[in-house]
Length: 299
Length: 331
Ligand SMILES: Nc1ncnc2c1ncn2[C@@H]1O[C@H](COP(=O)(O)OP(=O)(O)OP(=O)(O)O)[C@@H](O)[C@H]1O
Ligand SMILES: [Mg+2]
Image (cartoon, rainbow over the protein chains, first blue to last red):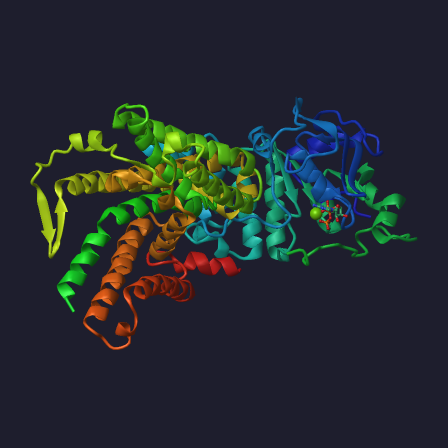
């Protein structure tokens, strides 16, 4: 049994220390939550897609949200970020009530999400995709745009975009249409673009889906990097090895509800989790044995 | 066959009243549809609002023509808000349905007996543009002749102002689409959720595009009214909207100069075929002379339809469009 994973960095140690004393039960209170969710429920017709009693996300940590297909993870993301409206429930982000807030305002508050089906804007160049992410651009208002008052800010925005592109190994592609990128490169672009907004919390919906193993490794490094820069990360992932590799905490959803929480190693030994995933009697842990759920079909 | 006459008609049409009017209308649609992806099928209504504003203000209220201009612009803005508020949050097709219906409703109100006092019913309104021509710097006897066609001083003034408006609308378009504002609306055209997720108020941008394109439509309405010295509900039928779309697609959507090139070529060819067919009938050309004038008029509309079909098959991006952008759609 390996007692430590390859996860590294000072913020990681901090997060692990902070979470050490958190009880391993669904809805456990965290020492410093950035997001607190209460009674969020969403049904489609007769089907209850999401029914989360209570959940808290620790600030500055990487939290993985896992669960079988159809567990409600994407729907939960949509609800939290204002892309969908819950039947009931409220949630506080950094102390601010987000219920009923439109998606763009949620994003402006610093809670940025990416999409399971990548949304690169394919008819725009890579660099323009990036520039679009920058906040508070004066040239995005009609009159200053016509008057050309945005030129100097554009230089700064482009500089920042180029830096991020270099970090995500996309700099050579900057002038290409985003539509000419490979699936994995689009995932990278979408993530880099999200970072242009200077988020405080990043929510990634299957950032690794369809990405080859070599690229996965560099994506993982990027995600760890976000934590080192002080961001909070919540990500959905099916590959348990990936989850174990980078997350400080794991939340497990099944049939719309949170069924377990804890550090990766402990959660993956949890009886309820194994049952939810494998739907039967199993005495093996979810990783190490190689059971992983990388999902490519959705692409 | 009088080729010089045909050529003269083509040149005067390429730069004449219709070219200006539909150029402006198409520039508006280019902002809305070309860049932002909004299907406004009611551009004729914005033209009508502009045209009738100047007409009614002068004829009914006895105010200056120049009071009618800001009123027309404000009315176009209000119309855009009225159409946009309920529909812009919904899927794109809703706007298309609502605008096409609203344009018909407005046209039917304009020609209705109930409002005949105000709008003049199916006769429309005449003789309101004196205030406009009073500002003309051209002497009364000014005239330009292009072959057999003669352009008088009033037409000259109308065309001058009209082309200046086209230039202004193109300049605004050019400044906007190269700015971060243009980047946001192009993003919205492709995937509005992606843009929303980056903190942009998508609804506000769509509304701005709808309003700006609608104001350009109102400008087109002013020129229509001035040029004909007449507004009439049947000028603002849905056909007008589709002519503007045809022009935009011909020239190239989402290209700043697409509508300009489109309108010049469209009117040169459209009016050119008309005189060619009529000349051909008179000259007893084979096949063509089997028709009479009425049939020829219908035939040219069919030829336009055929031309647009061929264009969509062989050059769907229009004359100025970028094929790469279209090819990416398939991915
Ligand atoms: N718009 C919708 N209309 C109807 N049902 C929906 C809708 N969106 C999601 N659902 C249903 O809600 C449930 C949860 O879906 P969701 O996409 O959130 O699952 P998920 O956990 O993200 O799954 P995956 O791992 O496959 O991405 C599913 O049963 C799905 O069929
Ligand atoms: Mg999902």
